[in-house]
Structures are given as C-alpha cells and as structure tokens.
Image (tube, rainbow, N blue to C red):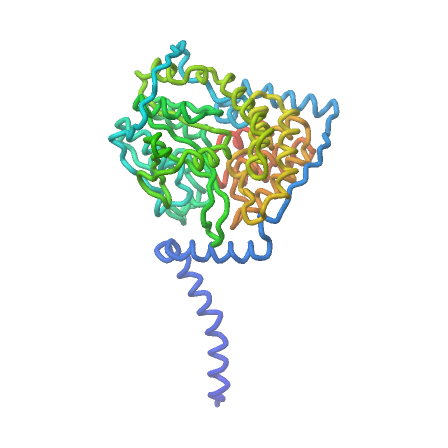
Length: 455
C-alpha cells in the first residue's frame, strides 16, 4: 500500500519541471511570444548592462600595423575588388564618397531665401509598434510626399528584412537589425521606385533652407539622447524629416518618427549640435524630372568629392574651436571624411584622436553606440593594415548590443580582419552570423563566395 503523503510529495516534485516545460512551450507560441518577448529582452538587457555597463568600456587603439608584403598585396586586392563586386559591397568597402547624383551642370544663383517656410502635403509616419524603424519611417514620409503609395513595411522588407526565422512574425524578425545605413535607403529609392535619391556630407543650415524653400524636404541624420530599452537615457542615432523653418524663431520644423511626433520644433543651435554627430549628412529624395533643379540647389555640393572635402574642412575648423563631446565628434568627422577620400592612414590617425578624447567624456553621456551607425574606423584601420584594432573595436561594439552580436557591419569588418590575420574559420563564422541578421546581404554573401564557402 502506498504512503499517500509520500506519493503526494513525489507528484509535486514532478509537477515542477512539467509545469516549467508547459510554461516554456506556451511562451514560444506566437501570440504569447510576440507580447512578452520584448519584456523578457528588456529584463535581460538591464541585467547584462548592470554588470557590464557599455558606456564604461573604452577602446584603446593599438596604433600598430601588420604591414608585410603579404598584407600589402591582400589589402590592395581588396581595394581592387571594389571595381568588381556589386554596388552594396562597393559602398560598404570602398569608403569612396556617396555615388554622384545627376551629372548636369549646376546653375549657381543668389536668390534671397524667404524668412519662413512650412511645406504642405506632408503625411506623418511614425515608427511605433516596430523595432528600429527610424529609417523606413522617414524614407516612407519622403517618398509619400512625392506621391509614392508604399508603406514603412514595404521599405523595411527590402532594407531590413530581419532574420530568417519562420517561427517569428515579420516584426519580430526585424528586431535584431539595429540600424539602416544611408546607402541602403538611397539604393532602395534608386533601385525600386521611379524616384531618385542622393546623400552628401558637410551640409549647412542655408543649404537645408534652400531645399525646403524650393519645395524639397530633407532627411538628416543626427544624434540625440533618449531613454533606451535598459531604462537609461543614452546617446542614439536618429533620422529626421525636415519640412520647414522659421528664421524669426530660429527653428526647424521636423517630423520625428519617435517621441516628439509631427511638426516638432527644434532650434538651430540644438539641431546643429546633433547634426554634427553625423558629419552633417543630408539626404534628398526627388522626382526624376527634378534633376537640373536638384543640382542647381546643391551648387558645389553637386560634386560629391567637393562635398566630402568641404566636410573635412569643416571638421578641421571645428577641431580648433570645440571641446569635450563636440571635439570628439569633430575628430570623428575628420576621420570619416578622410575615409571617404580614401586617405586611410590620415583617417586612422583622426579616429585615434577621437578615441583618446572618449575616456574624458561624462560616462553617462558617452556615445557608445557610435559604431552601430558609422563604420569608418573599421575601414580606416583595415586599409591601414591595423587588423587587431578592427577586431578589438568590433568586439567592444558587438558587446554593447543586448541579446547578441546584432550588427552585420561590425561582424563583416571583424570577419575581414580575422581573414587577414589568418583566422579564416572565425571570419566565416562572422560572415554567416551577419547573414543571420540580414539574409542575402550582398557584402557577407560575396565574402563567403570569395572563400569558396556556401552562405
């Protein structure tokens, strides 16, 4: 005869793992998982960053190269491949300036700008209920302004398709892709729509006003401070759709896809301070019959190399006058412009200066996500044969991401450096992990094919 109390205790013990398995199974059913996954992820992020705060980690450049005859040949080969590989790979690797827009000769005019302009016909699009949708939402607004009928999801399915996981819905799949690069947005417009797009560095306020007063809204990329998924206020990158200005109030009118919403007013000084974080990058989307008009408005910025050199000149001027955070961004911009001019050693030296300033900045405000959005340091160190610096910087950057190494560009460049350092297996792992984040991404696919390996 059974001992009933003992049998009850035995049943209760077995009930614990069975219940746990049932709860785990329920958690991974799509309806429940989609509602709870972000809460679990936020908790994991808070725990991870509590013990390993990403803003306390400091990258220290080694400053030495692996410059042997073999690396010179291999690096030269990598640059040569830029002329052979697909467009997206060229943009990622080449570090040349953004592709030119229309080739028409600009007509320079000196027409006074109106004191105030607010563009009509803007249809506001937010990024709510989506992950990292700043790029798709802003690009959708810019295209909708000209009559395009697509949605933010139509854009995202091309430029941030997300991981190839059939157990997740489209929104969940796209969560791990943390950023959309400017070239991806421009390529989407030029390759999949009847409209045209271009971007340049080194813009200024008058140039933005010229476009707006002529009826062309502008997308800019800037930095700002906002509460993140870990619950702390920290620096992030953000696109803004600029649709108006007023000189009397000294404000731009922007469509902010996140917290600030439609027709948000931002003063010129605050705007410039955030815009500096991204080398004064601006993007124009326009109808195909506006080629000449766009070049007239661009003026000397129509020449992409001139625009990059101008951005470099601005950075050099700001380095002499700015301090603290602004000096850090000015040195970073100097490196970025040198990279775009394919002056890699000069670029690496400028980035070294930026990274030397970084430890002196207020820990709570350090822009530790910088390499999420701008990959110039990888390029400068790689093409200067400083592979250890590429690997170390990529590791620090990837460790700053909650949940996993979810930055395809950082994985790609670390893979490139691993290969040059003779660690081919690690390179292949990084390329494949990049493709998990961004399936069929051309740079990683091409790198694996060059090694004779299947993606």
